[in-house]
Length: 394
Ligand code: SOE
Image 1 (cartoon, protein in one colour):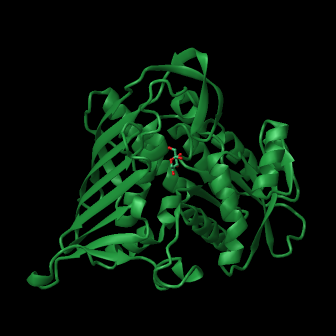
Image 2 (cartoon, protein in one colour):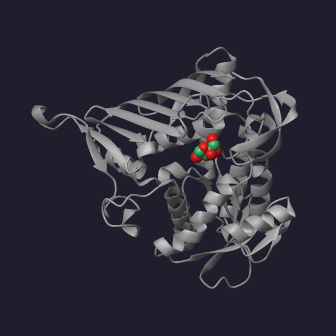
Image 3 (cartoon, helix red, strand yellow):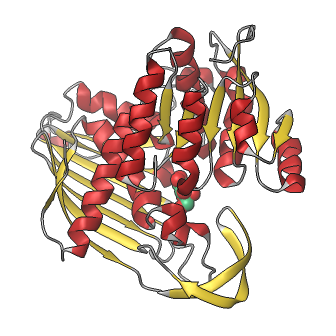
């Protein structure tokens, strides 16, 4: 681990500074102001390939210094945590280097582009753990208070035996066939398309809230637009086109049926072609005693149906998840004063910092994220076999 006296600080070095880098920066800036934690995050350095751009990003996002080579950031003596916010093709290499250098690692989802890479990351994390080095994958939606509360309701038996899970993650940012071939549409950079980018979120979220893991799937995937203009410039989800074109090598949409380890059956749909849906993540869980619905577009709410209520009072109740007793909410505003997307990242950093400070393993672990990767892999295998049933390895 980095040798110098950290003075109650964990000095963070972030790699990448686009959309996810900005979201993580906002969370690192805020986390110690909102939460009382045993350790403070210091935004020590950020790395990106373009010197002028990374300097501008550091100034805007609040990082103390910059690198154009992430290897130097990882090697720096005064970095304790490496936060990986790059496209998936570099996750494995950066994580392995950071763990070997004794740095704690937070890595954006999906963990890697392939199961093999994810396995290598799990092995490296296990080795580093023996010397107190921690690692975590960034499935931020677990940290939305309504999602964490849904998990509590299910764990507390309020829904009874879970029978059905119905999960969709719907976006539409590439419906225009002229939208450029950004890295998220290139298999060698992103591993897969809607499946890994947003499907991974609903896989993790549903497994997290139900406490059940996906054991097998039957899937279809589709790439509606097979050729697109190459980008002349791009950042986050926006881009400009050049005159040349290239092949889209990932799925635009992935749909699958699944069985869960506790006996539930589930449906999943992840698409970037749901016209009008910008970031529509919705999960419904039906159990023997009740049901619940979470919708990211109304993230301060949870719909809850309690089958034990008298007949005359049946119906879904809208719970406003803004009370101090709801997960994470005591740190924010008085009841009814809502929070947003960025808070899920602040909560993620809160949980990560606390775990590192007290010497616990933060969750989701790299092993948890490997299991998600295995589900994604099974979906791809099932889809290419013509929707055949495909078992997810344990
Ligand atoms: C783009 O599809 C994206 O930004 C994902 O990469 C994020 O993980 C998701 O939270 C929102 O959509």
